[in-house]
Length: 342
Figure 1: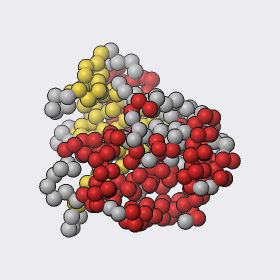
Figure 2: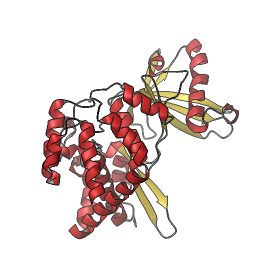
Figure 3: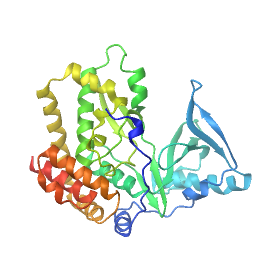
């Protein structure tokens, strides 16, 4: 299994002309009143501690009174753009409650907490550096997964909605031992999630980079694993990075599969997920085609990683045509072509 040390901090790739044109065409590009750079002008910060007294590795940041008067209404307006396409008539009772800054990770995001003045209900969204890899990851998640993603870009700034769920590492520690939990359904979902990541080349899905979405059903509970970090979309060269079951952080989920699923059932679930991905790809073939047209001319990884990944995939799929791929876009296109042939 992979260790955390094997993944170095990822390069941030700027959004090129082709991807920028795609984002504008599909309404993913919006003008906003505040950028990531604006939020960097805070004057102080304090560690954010969770309800159990643990350091979250986030900091709550503070601004001068004059900056707050400009920033906070603008941040509420961005939330309105994200949720209601900018209709402030239903947002006047909202305000910024807190701004947090992430001190680890690739893009060091800001998390904006918005609170409802009437009932103290709250929501979050994120402001990040616009990284091309992450944008490709968000789009592929929106098109090829069972989930929908709400985000938009403005120049070098990326705005993302909050994806709700129980963090995978927390779920493994606190919920897997709950009496009467449906271990078989969780094992099945992890197999399907593992297959989604492999097919669309989403890497680094350690437990804290995904959440468990738990939905009560009429006779039991359904589980869905949702990725929340897309920085490692088609970047790494080692195939294992795109297979979540190789990370030691995910050992608890792997052990459930070993406990409850035989090889025939595992293959069944893999094929079910590949079929669903192929169906989604077909349903959104024009948009997916436009996205791949951008990706095959974009630089989102290094030559060394491209050569390693195409070699690994050639062996994995027993398909030597991978070796002709010149970039990550062409490699991903070949992966998607493979599932369409299944």
